[in-house]
Length: 267
Ligand SMILES: [Fe+2]
Image 1 (cartoon, protein in one colour):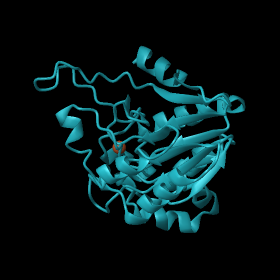
Image 2 (cartoon, rainbow, N blue to C red):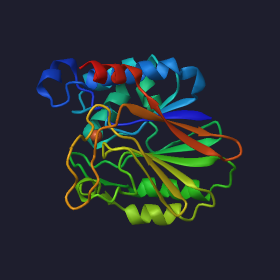
Image 3 (cartoon, helix red, strand yellow):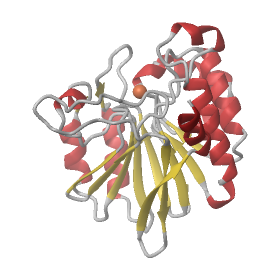
Image 4 (cartoon, rainbow, N blue to C red):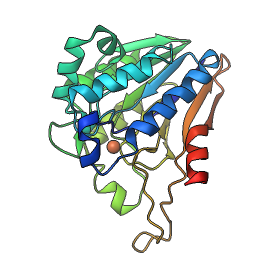
């Protein structure tokens, strides 16, 4: 099965667009959705790991729904810290399509992969926490005797980047408990995250953590970070495509969004 992973779109309502620091968000989200629609026949699923919106406005959730419904594929979303999460739940209550996409605290199985969505957000806070019920669900899925793979979708990554400036806003309550439970899994546990606006892959034991960047709000500091000589350059005009086959092979490749490439070379 193949699925695409996108994160941190930070959409705003049209009337707020001029007031926010991310004026390209609308254009970028539309470009991503169009690109996904273009390869939809090669995909089974699209995962968006939170921060669908910047200010949790109902009109921004509606804009997300309009754009991503046009892809014509099943979606799985979880909230990010910018989505409330109370406001996202409230929007879901008004939209059947959106509430079907929201996999918070439930499991959706598709093509031999069980996607478990966790809400890691604390209303009004940038840092996150995993709830008791989320940990119980994880425990249940880790113990389940099945041949399907487990993929946990959560906004805050449980494995941090190791660069102080990023890690400082990536605090996650019950992180260690999460890692301890996942370590009991017989097979590798896939984690799909966002939040830090920089793409990376991290592995610890049997946990493989894939973090998508943000095409709407990439980090673009040209200078090294503190005493760590790693430059967080943008390089964020792509989303990830994951391919997991029946032999268990898991290939992850970036898919460049053509409209963003053309935009960056002409402006
Ligand atoms: Fe974000």
